[in-house]
Every structure is written in C-alpha cells, then in structure tokens.
Amino acid sequence: MTQSLLDHRTDARLGLEAVERSLREQAQASIRECILNGHFAAGQKLTERQLTEITGASRSILREALSHLEARGLLVRRTHRGFTVAKLEPRSIYEIFELREPVETLAAELFTERASEQEVAEIKAAFEALKHSFQAGDLGKMRSAKEWFFSVLFTGCRNTEIRKALENVMDRISYLRIQLLSDPQRRQLALLEMGRLAKALIARDKDAARAASIAHLVSARGALIKQISNND
Amino acid sequence: MTQSLLDHRTDARLGLEAVERSLREQAQASIRECILNGHFAAGQKLTERQLTEITGASRSILREALSHLEARGLLVRRTHRGFTVAKLEPRSIYEIFELREPVETLAAELFTERASEQEVAEIKAAFEALKHSFQAGDLGKMRSAKEWFFSVLFTGCRNTEIRKALENVMDRISYLRIQLLSDPQRRQLALLEMGRLAKALIARDKDAARAASIAHLVSARGALIKQISNND
DNA sequence: CGGGAATTTTTTGTATACAATTTTTGATAC
DNA sequence: GTATCAAAAATTGTATACAAAAAATTCCCG
Image 1 (cartoon, rainbow over the protein chains, first blue to last red):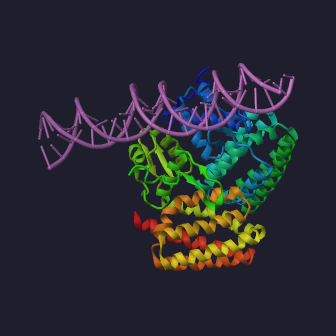
Image 2: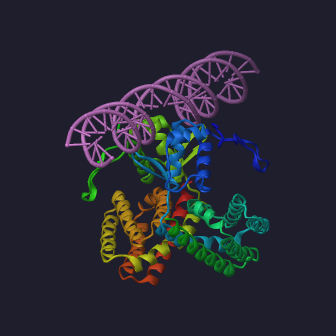
Image 3: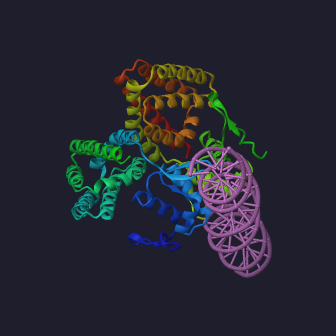
C-alpha cells in the first residue's frame, strides 16, 4: 500500500535521459493529481498522517509539498488546523473566467502568429485525441487529451508567463471540469466549441480564434457555475 | 542579530484584533521582503544556514517557506543545489508585460465600473502619497505607495483572481522597479503616467483608464528591458 | 438522557539528527 | 604555476522527536 502513488522514480519520457525526482517532487505530484482528478474532494481535510501513509514520504517532505500546493491555490491552510482541498465558490468561478477571457484569447491570437508548423500539426493531433476520448467517454483520457491540447496551445503562443497563469487557474477548476464532462450532452457541446477553436488555430485565423476562444469560455463558465450551484 | 528580520510577532494594523503569525509565515514574509526590495540580489544563492541565522527559524520551517516562495516564482530550486533568487531575462520581462497588458487593463476598466466611492477617494489619496514619495525620492516609501495604489485598484475591481495573478508578476519584477525608480527622470515620467491613470480611475472613465493603463505598461516595459539589458 | 468540564488522543508547529550529495580544500605530480 | 585527484567541510534531502494546540472522548452532575 505504501508508495502506491509514487511509482515513477525515474521519468524517461520523450526519450530524454532519466531524471531522478526527489521524494518531495513525487509526493507533490501525487497530491496534485489526486486533487485534479477529484480523488480528493473539494473542501476535504487532508491530515499529514494520512498523506504520509498514502505517499510514503515523511512529514517534513510532505509539508514542503503542501506548502507549495498551497501557494498555487490548490490547498487552503489554517493555522493549527491543517490543510483542506481548496473549494471554489460560484463567485470564484466567475472571477477565474473573467481573468481567463483576455488571457486565453491572447494566447490563441499569439498562437496563430507564432506557432511552428509542427505545433499546428500537433494541435490537430491533440484535437483528434480529444474527439476520440470524448466519444469514448473515458474521463481520464479526456483530461489528458485536454491537457495536451492546451499544452500545445500555450507552448505555441511563446509566452511562459501566460502558460503559468493559465495552467494555475485551470488546475484549480480541473475537478469541476471532470464532473462536468461526465454529462454526454455537455461533452458534445464542448467538443463542438473546441473544434471551432482548433480549426481557427490550424488556419491561423486570428479573429476566428479569438471568437472561438471567447465563445468556449462563456459556455464553460455558465455550465460550471450552474453545476457548482446545484452541487452545494 | 538573530530574529532581526522577524519583529512583528503580532500584527494589529487597522484596529483589527492582533493575529499571531506562525514562525513560518514570519520567515516567509521576511524572505519575500528581502527579495522584493533587492536586499537579496537576483541570482544570489541562498543557503539554508544563512537564512536560519537571519530569520531565527529552524530549517524545517524555512524549507516550507522556501517551497512556498518557489511556487510563487520568487525562488528557483535545483535539486541538491539549493535555492537562488529568481532572475529575469529580457525575454521574461517582455512576456510578463504581454500578460499584464490585457489583465491590468481589465482591472482598470472594472475599477471604473465597480469601485465604491470610498475606493475612488482612496485611489486619490494613494496617488498623492505616491507623488510625495516620488518627489522626495524615498525608495522605500515609493514602493509602499505604489503597492497601496495597486492594492486599492485590485480591490476595487472586485476580482481576487486578477489581484493574485497581477500581484504575483509584480512581486517578481519588484526588484527591477526599485532600481528603475532611482533614476529621477524615469520617476518623473512614471509619475506623469500614473497621474493619468489615477485621473481616469477617479473620473470612472473606462476608455481613458484603458489608454492610460496601456501607455504606462508600454513605457515601463521598455524602461525595464533596457535596464536589465544594460545590467547584465 | 443531556450538557459541560476534564482528560485523553490526535494533529499540527517546531527543532534536531542522520544520510546523501555537492563544494571546497589541500596535497601531489607535472 | 597549474592540473588533478583525494579528503574534508559544507549543504541539501530525509526522517524523527518533542512541544503546543485542537479534536475527541470520558466522566460527572443535573
């Protein structure tokens, strides 16, 4: 049981040489994953003892990881009362999308100007993967495909700051997104919207990319707020 | 000497009841301050022993604080090689401003729509403080006045996400800003630009606020990139 | 039963000890 | 003098111990 979440001691993806990750990095990545995929519920209390058992790391390591995740807004810390998984109010969702709109729009516009031909091709591939995962209804694959798509978008726009800012807020709404996409109808709509965005990006059509970006954000915001309002 | 940086055990500002801050929070705040005001130079190696002596906190506490500051992009960590103060390349400055432009513009626009009358009055007061500190040439007061001004702006726009995103990137360029404002000519120009922004915010003139915001950002970006290119 | 105070248990805050790695030092050979 | 390599010192990665606070339980009294 111990270390069940800490498998990848070394990570040799993409053929690069294996990189040893410290226990702290592993624990941090594990906990982040558990939050993003909803395995740890929003608002849930995370005791350090429980996490040491799950991750196999000692408390000192753990607390560094938790401190990091708190800074990223995934955890909330209250003195002498420990950590809980950050929980979003409808108001926060609204604010996140209010921020995302101009930033993500900018990212899409910049992509049409700056992305390499290879990145354009990869957007195409990522969207195909997204389509298949959506049609199959596999939540895990849907998330990783979506991550792939946006990762290419953020890389192609050639701005690391935009990437960091957007990845941060998208991490924080990830658990809601998953719940949302378990609804086949919502999935259908999201696929349509993403398709428009992908098409515009591939055509390097700046105005269309902007429009598709905004349309998707408005739609997603509405769905998420509606969902979170029902859940509570 | 020990604990010289950790004075405010309790913090009773604004008449609120005193709040005990944990050692970790104090250490974190101290180190952050040292980075923001340039007391720790960009690129500088920070050994844990040195920081325990400065802050009086033990290593475990310290490492939590460092982990937090790393997540916020103020520190860079390399395995087995410790922490260094994050250093910005010209390219990063450019990217930060590319991100700031749409976000800060949005903040200014929202302020004109959403700020209370009291907040408008406070913007006025903050700008007066800024003017006096600029004319006096007191770097410390200039920074705190600028922080005050933007704090009111970010509060008045009623969007915590925008605040967090902008405070984060502004923290990271703070040390450059300080160097920049030691030049009286640059100070004069910055004051002029901030004055236009303040005037627009007070008049709740959305278009003027947008224009002033963009103008100031373009100007500041140019100055910072020029400066950083010379320094290296 | 129910409420509340005292006590136990759990949990978090903090400090320290040990192991692994990197950096520095210093001696030796050329 | 300098290049190289081994030993020593310093630094980071990790685990654990102790103290203080919060939460849970027990026990008493009505």
